[in-house]
Image (cartoon, rainbow, N blue to C red; front, side, top):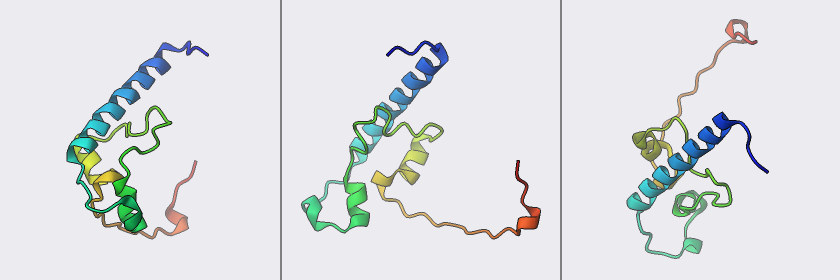
Length: 96
């Protein structure tokens, strides 16, 4: 099947390039683990697995992420994040 829309092809190529860049960054920063994967709990194991979903061609594209964002929020870097919960009354929420 061919893609006839040139803009879609350009977007796809951009995502492939982002995946390549983020994957290289991940591999360069990879912290080698001392134990076999089976011996880690799930939350550590999630960052242990570097390949993401390699069957998906853009498994690390993270379009919109800078390299710094990739380190901050990419699961393979296992950086802690603090969630800020915000309650908003439904009377002041706008919907389409």
